[in-house]
Amino acid sequence: MHLAAAKEDAVSIHDTFSIERNENAVDVAALTRALDAGQVDVAVHWLQLLLMESGDQDHPLTKRRKTIKHTRVRRLKTLQNAVAQMLRDYDKDREEDSLTLRPGLATAVCELSYSQLQMFALQRMRPSSTAYNVVRALQFTDVPLDLAALESACNALVAKHEALRTCFDVDASAGAQPRQIVHPLSHFQGELGVFRVVQSELLTLLDSSSDAELAAVVAKVADEPFDLARQAPIRVYAVVSPEQSSTPWVLAVVLHHIATDAASSQLFWNDFHTLYDRFLHSENAMVSTAEVIRQLEVEASSGSRVTYRDFAVWQRSRMRSGVLAPALQYWMQQLTESGAPPLLELPFDSGSTIASVELNAPESSTTKGDVVVFRSAPTLQKAFSALCHAQGASMFMGLLAVFYLLIGRLSGQQDFVIGAPSSGRGLADLQDVMGYFVNTLPLRLGVKCSEDADFTEFLFSVREVVLGAYNHMEIPFHKVLEHLRATAQSDRDVVGDAERRWQHPLFQIMFSWEHSDDSSDSKKYVELSLPHQSAKFDLMLSMRYRRLKGAAVGDRVLEGSMEFPTARFTRDTVERFTGYYLTF
Image 1 (tube, rainbow, N blue to C red):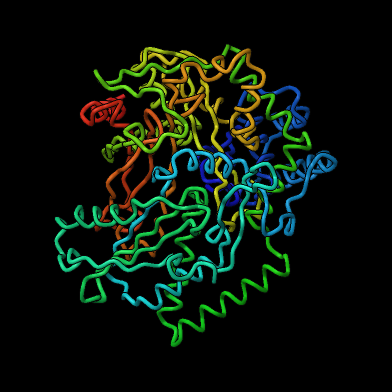
Image 2 (cartoon, rainbow, N blue to C red; image 1 turned 90 degrees about the horizontal axis):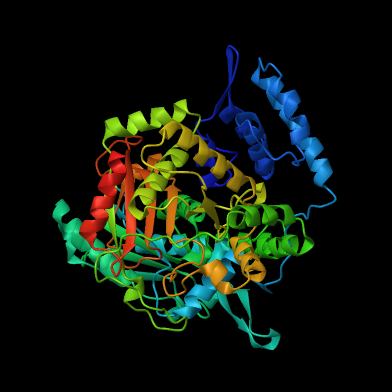
């Protein structure tokens, strides 16, 4: 189920919900698809009120809860009409407090969004780091190679999405404030061009033994830092055979995280397949490219579309207006009511340590990482999915609950925070905008997570925490952390041991649920598994469904990857962790 094309992380939470009312069952998926994406936050409130016995008594929708709870819903249309009226009433109540996102809020040079600001600061700390290079490589075997059409498609993508032609620096005349500057496509030519060709004899081999070597070639060319002040935050490599034969060939795209996220990546690749197919079958690809650029320039000058810059200005305006004060209060309560979150004590391997990290230090072993990839057996996958569905939870919630249990066993602690990304795309106008919208949610469970606890009860607690978090997801995490520091008696009350909290002041582990694209186009390529270069947290678990090489479309396995810093753990240790995770 898709919450009206809203954020992929929130979607995963609600994808298995159904609401039982006597002999009738209403499919929430069908209902929420009918809602406008701009009302996702209200839809989340509504789901929480229906599905949970406890809620925020001060919430503006709580007064309608009794009516909803005791209404016998016999037809989906009746429920849709009732909720639509609720949404209209709620929108009317919020009208005085809301700021509208609209085209033309920003100029060509403007301030950064809060997510961009955090990413920009991280990159400036270590300008030689490639930790935030997002790399994806696809090997094509049934799609013809046409370098001219390929370059045209890449240029058209950069022209279409202004996030791909945005540079970042500081404004010395404004107190060294970070700013983003959107350039025309013509700015990125010559040495600043985004398209490059790499030759490799490995493509003349058709056996699978060359896959790892080919992935190493891609990883090597991709392991180059971005100069965000000069370069576009994208590089595209066409890896071809020396003879430049039609197939096979590899397309590797490297994006800096400041310009992309999971939803943006899907948007990028959907556009790529469309544009490359168009230029591949065009008699004059350069003319088609010029036409696309001209159309985009006309559209930009008319101010008819919301841009990422508009979002950045809008987000900061809402923060300054006080509209997000209730969300900030929620997070302060979650993170301080029981005291500051304690430092998570994981069982690091003997002799492994990460010393104090200077903020201006060059890239060092502190961020070198590796990853262990693992897969669930199909029978286990189906059984676990059925268990989650029976408890009214999504796979996201279920897999997160197991991760909580694993970390609780490894650390011997009951109270800790796990970071989880949310896409931050709750508005309809943002669905086709490429950029870094992701906001991190610090999920603090605050209940006993021992291995002898009843899992279904524990899963319910996790679901409650997740629903509450996404109910208040709009507040930028950067501002939550800023407020925590401002109200703490000392910085140590927030960040604990500064030498140990080398990655993040509130949590040292992350969990993410990734939505893979299993469209018909995926029959034409196979994604290469690239070697890992860096780690951002003590442990980061990412789960996804993945179509394996040679598998039919729709035939997917549940796959996980656990990223770790090599200065903390050995690979054998993390492999044991993944084994524990699969057998919980």
